[in-house]
Length: 149
Figure (cartoon, rainbow, N blue to C red):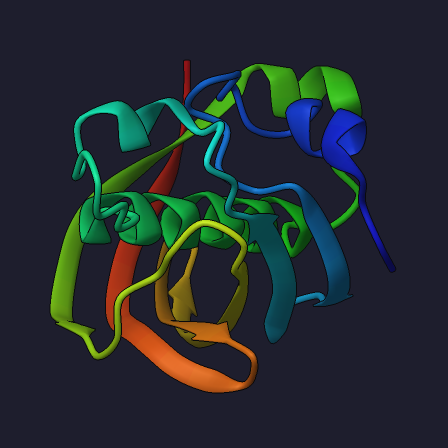
């Protein structure tokens, strides 16, 4: 199953400039998700991080992971309608074991690979990894809860 940005926006509330997931290329409900963000010099964050030496901020990589994790959690909750999904939101409870291994720069395709570590009801624990050209650039464990708005 793939999702484009229009389908992604039906599930998570983020919008430009804070929507950090361009496409989902694979979802295995209850198990894993693969998606990506194309990093371009046109991203607003590069105006200040860092002028003359553009590096995509680690906190934005983690937020992209979180957004991908939210999609995985929503899509894993059975046959939720668009209307039902519109009444829910994902709150992140914790980010643990975050590591940044290599800088991400304009022109990179940041691929997110999320997998479910554990799920109990509305609470999800996920392993997130971010890759550029199959090289691990960041990883973290994310914990989230799906709640009513």
